[in-house]
Image (cartoon, rainbow, N blue to C red; front, side, top):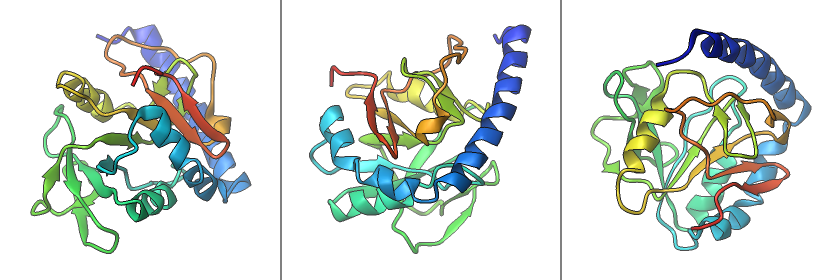
Length: 200
C-alpha cells in the first residue's frame, strides 16, 4: 500500500523529471547513438555476451530512444522483443519483433507487436524511466507494469538483468522507494554503463 505522503512526493518528482527529460532530449539529440556505443560494456557487465532475446520498448514523447541500441544488438545476433499489456494489473508479455513489422495498440493504448507474434522470455530487459539513482532506484510513469513484470521474472530461475535506459542528466539522489518497486541492475546512458548489481 502506498503511503499518501510518498505518493504525493512521487507525483511532484514525476512532474519535475518529465520537464528535465524533455530538456535533455532537446539538448542531446545524439545521446541515443552514444548509448548504443556502450552496449558491449553493458553486455560484459551483465554476463550477457552470448546473443539472446532483448526486450526493448517503443519510445513515447521524450523517452530515451532505444532504436540505436536495438539495431546494435540485432546486428550482434540478438532477437528483439517489445512489451504488450494484455491484462490490467498483470505482468507485461514480450513478443518477438523485427523493425518494419506491423504494430497495434495493446490494452493500454501503446504500440505493441500483433497478438499473433511469438511470445518470448527476455534474457535482458531494457526499460524507460523518468529518473534513476546509483542504488538502482527507478522512477517510472506510475503504472507499475515493469515492477509487476520484474517481480514475476525474478521469481523464476535465471532472471534477466533489468537495465534502465536514460540520459545521464536524469540521475537523482533523492528517489523514494516502496516495497513493490523493483530495483535496476544497471543503467545505460550516453556517458556509459553504470553497474548497480555486480554479481552476475
